[in-house]
Amino acid sequence: MAKQGKGGKAANVDANVHAKGKAPRKLGKAEYLEHLGPLQLELNAMARWLQQKKLRLVVLIEGRDTAGKGGVIAALSERLNPRQCHTVALGTPSERERGQWYFQRYVAHLPAAGEIALFDRSWYNRAGVESVMGFCTPEQTAAFLEQAPRFERMLVDDGILLFKYWLTVDQAQQEERFAERLADPLKRWKLSTIDVDARRLYKEYGEARERMLAATHTKHAPWTLVDFNDQRRGRLTLIRDLLDRLPDVDVPDAPLAFPPLETEPQREKFKGKPRPIALRW
Figure 1 (cartoon, helix red, strand yellow):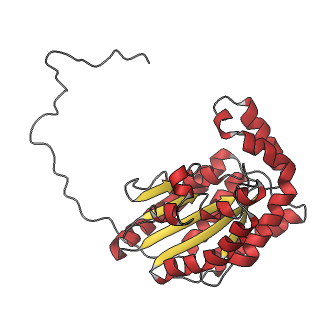
Figure 2 (tube, rainbow, N blue to C red):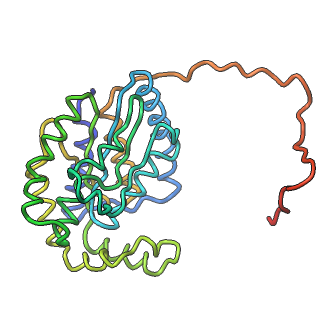
Figure 3 (cartoon, rainbow, N blue to C red):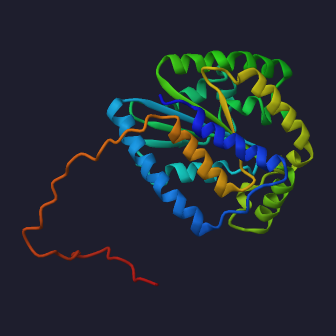
């Protein structure tokens, strides 16, 4: 793999600028898309390289509620082959899953050769929401923090390319996004009672994150923190960082013959029923 410095340094610089109260202006949609397009071309080249080398890529996207996990996963995956790139967003564990080894239900979603798995939250639920909201015991959290580095060591030793990202967001920005979700019927589904309860526990979530980072920021599976107070800038920064930490290789598409049709193009024809419904727009 390529050296990890360039992209990771940029992410850290952005976070420091924001911390000093000198956050850059919000990135407009047109400018964002202008930068995103070339990055998505690079992501496609990266995906071809993974297939050629039969490698496996796992990207964990973690962060507070409203940080922007779904948005960056969409930016990463929307131009990739969905048969190759899978998004993993697991719901509440079933009764059977609660009786399994904690990591077991996540193992089932790890990629095969040439595939990509993007985790919208991951096994780190145990160190975050489960711990803060009391869904697990302190002993279970402690056991997880001890076992996670060993689990990830096994993944990396088996050849999986593992990247862990934490999206940072200040509480004022989080409150603004919560309010937007409450007011927008198309985003209302994103707001749950757990989210509402979490509003009063911003400090506690931060403390849980610090314990998690102290225990699981390892040489073989380090964390990268990205400032997501401006989600568009955050997405571009994260994607650039990920690409910079993988080899810069050009794997061209396989040649594909595309001869002209031997006859005039034909129209769809239907015999009997059913027929296409009438267009309304």
